[in-house]
Image 1 (cartoon, rainbow, N blue to C red):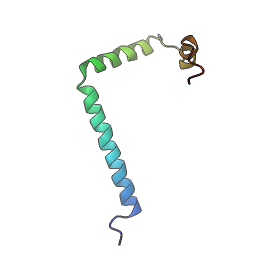
Image 2 (cartoon, rainbow, N blue to C red; image 1 turned 90 degrees about the vertical axis):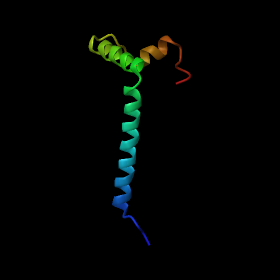
Image 3 (spheres, rainbow, N blue to C red; image 1 turned 60 degrees about the vertical axis):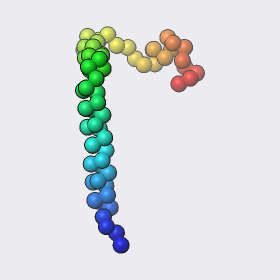
Image 4 (cartoon, helix red, strand yellow; image 1 turned 90 degrees about the horizontal axis):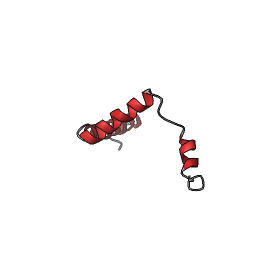
Length: 66
């Protein structure tokens, strides 16, 4: 006997994943240092102070490891 349909199982899985994401978001929001680091990073993106990841990998000589 099946208690849940496939669709219900799918919905429960999605709900559980959303709850995990919400908990992670709350953890980040409570870490003031991390929130500030994120603000700085977003500002740097807006100011075009970023560069492609492959450029950084080459600069650090990590091509063989990645």
